[in-house]
Image 1: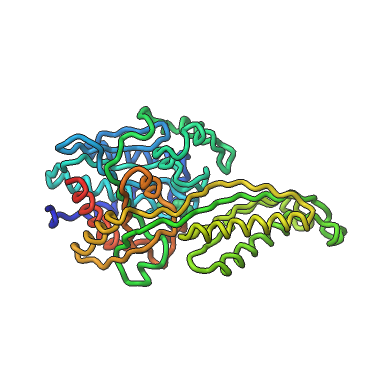
Image 2: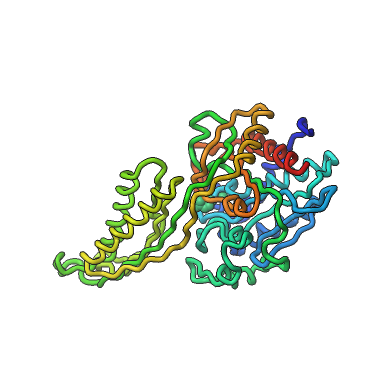
Length: 409
Ligand code: GLV
Ligand code: MN
Ligand code: MN
């Protein structure tokens, strides 16, 4: 109906760059770990923009924030959103595009004087990244009832601080009850964060599903001893066990093949000295697959490996699950809407799975949900060099505009 309406790409980019100044890192990108002072400043900026655009702003007890734009009729809004927290070495697009793309749609509608039938709502969810506090997608998980507020608040981060204390400290804890407003449909635009669209020469990804995610923390406890005098047969070496497990993860993932990926991304070794056998090694394993059976196979094999290794080495192993989400398919009619809108705007489009986790996978539990991907140059993300070309940001956000209008009319 409003198929000649277009968003303003410059304005969108201006907001992305302005938000990227908060927690900016030397050389580009930014660090706005969840519930830090930088996150507080980012929230303040985005909520300020929501007010400027005339949105009715609320936040819930989990710090999820919502900007509502009333429709001509009452009822559950069509929601667009994502997150504004980043990993420690983040880019300026991951998550931020989904929120600021939503605000750009609102400003476009404001300028054109269009009121949709259903209300629209632009949201950002707390701690999507999970880099400081596991699991990832925590705010949206609590929002859809998949984790209690109490459990989330009690979660301890990598720095020993708790979610609840940090929410309170930065003033992010809101008054609105968790799980409000109810949602008619949810749409998230996001950078792909992988190489597929660029390699295929395609502008828009219509995301069909998000792959399953398994995050585990393993801790080996051995005995520290002298590196020169301790015969190999007498060692209880936690450092060796961690490294052997890291190598096993790569071998396992290669053997399973297909979509299976695996990462040892964090490692803490003690006493961390050149001439001392390590008595402590704590590290994380991130396993993902679009196929849940294969993902379970990878988890089982990893478990068997570390148990045998610990026994052979005469050390203890402790196992903690940080996150575990099954693969999430999106409603086919929503995927079709993204594909059809992209085509109607003259963009090339392909259906694809998401390798990264997203708030959309949680919203899919409570409403029809879609994701729009735009290309990531060189497939780089969670890196300060993350980049998406302005014309691709604009193309994707125009698709968002059309999908939201379609859903709200
Ligand atoms: C979080 O968004 C992840 O995919 O790691
Ligand atoms: Mn993200
Ligand atoms: Mn991310």
